Image (cartoon, rainbow, N blue to C red):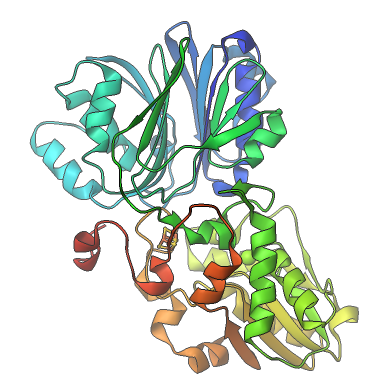
Length: 455
Ligand code: SF4
Ligand code: MG
């Protein structure tokens, strides 16, 4: 998911349009639903629906959403199914006043917290982790919303970046390990919060800093207040954001994402030796790494596969059948480029093997002499419990088969992955430590729950 927040009382008329643009820039983080909640002098108005940002909003809707501050969300489901009641932001009116919430990530103790709340009479409308947070806030004995939220954060386990809004404040919080991204920026007048810096570029905001792990910030007419509700935890930022999820023009920890991916490609070319005529990226996610691989190996970078721009990220479709079909529509080899060549395909990751198997098959159909595949991340062998959609063990191909098995299954002449060490070496993010659990099995938070298979 992607989250956005803005506090800019002087931009009352354009606050929803700015939020809309911010969400457009974050669209790659989720395409199932979108929503914006504005705060008009203490009145909170919410608009959300299924679909892409550009389908959910139009001029008329945006014009009706005015206010001094706003939060927004784009969703793809990791927990909770894909339906309107699970769209965000959530807006509740509890005994402490209005609270609007939007969240990126996944709580591993959500089921436990929810059961406990239900046994005390809470009634849930959605299957969202976010609603668990809302109920905990409502039930807190603290009567101030910000204190209640802080108290709630202490009970959460997992990866989360939250933006929230009360009648008076814009609030942002990041989990104690900094698993999911969250950044703070400045407008001419006012402040913005977003999952990634690419949202700032589009609205002309200036990056100030990252929200720190375990930090909660409150923005209102008096400026920004920062509070560390949890400290002394090591940074465990999701390395998969660098590999695949984040947009290449975003910067994280001072490191540009595209440049990190290019370096992963270079590193891969140092680690493996494959004889071939052309390096072909699997678009779009394999492009940066393919560039680096070509540079370092001296094998020419060649556009050999075309991507249909009008099909979204394929993994986002919930069923396997639709996923298969979509890969076919999405990627088409250029026969004249591929015919008779020894091809190295470069992609960022193999999760289920759907993309690789299909694309290799089609590259062969197009007449390639050999098809090798180089993946700029290690094998995904463990599920993610912190908000990336690699949660089903049975679906992870590298969990079911060894390297040779996978190579045969996807129909490649050779298959190589980047090493974990090489991956981490490629990312020059300042002060960052990484979660690598889906590759290494080292879960930074809640391993007692993870080991029991609780999600
Ligand atoms: Fe990211 Fe993998 Fe850790 Fe999940 S398990 S947070 S995808 S690095
Ligand atoms: Mg891809």
